[in-house]
Amino acid sequence: MRSALAGATGDRLELDAYLKDFDKHFWNAGSAGFWKLERRQTFRESGVKSWEAFFRGEWGKALSLISEQRGHYERYFRKIADHGFGLHRVRVVEEPITPYLQWELHLLRLKEQCGEDTRVVGLDGIALLESDGTLPEIAIIGSSVLYEIIYDGDGNLIGGTKYTDRGVIAECKRIILGVYESGERLNSFFGRRVASLPDPAVHNLRA
Image 1 (cartoon, rainbow, N blue to C red):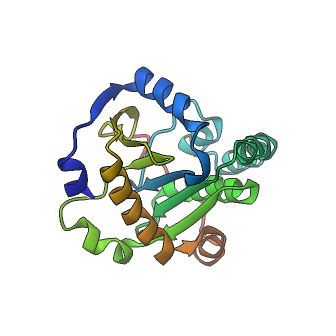
Image 2 (cartoon, rainbow, N blue to C red; image 1 turned 135 degrees about the vertical axis):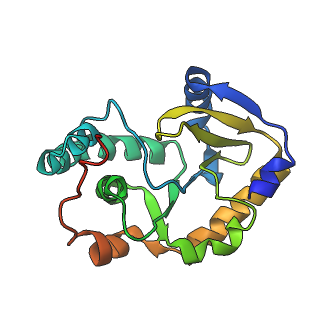
């Protein structure tokens, strides 16, 4: 996928411009839907109350705050359905599961219950695709807009690079679909690998 993007011209957008442009296109995804590939194993989600509780080491509070978002996500995914598209996510999960990812998988499970379509894949499922570098974080809206989502070294969102070449978008979507089809449904993966994990140790994250 890196090679597909390397041959294309994209527009680098700083954070505010990226968020504004993303929102402008998102609700017009149409039948092609929204597809997201998440590769990084840790992010910072400053401003998200459940993440902040997790980051403070308050695991029970973090899970409670996730549960309290059910109504919000039920309305959100109902709105997405009313706009005629679906939201699909491919989540790469390395072993051992990072503290951040343990938190995120609880959130993604709630989103799945409310209407998101998520598949999980391990490193063996993407090994051949990373021969030219680690897979980027990608969001594809419909068939006309692709963003490589950009983060700083600590995992803070700082912007994105926008691509509109339909050939490049089609190739990247083909790759993501291939990974998606080889993946495990989140609900199955969660029950098998996440539900019984002990509370995550986050003291090193706060150092």
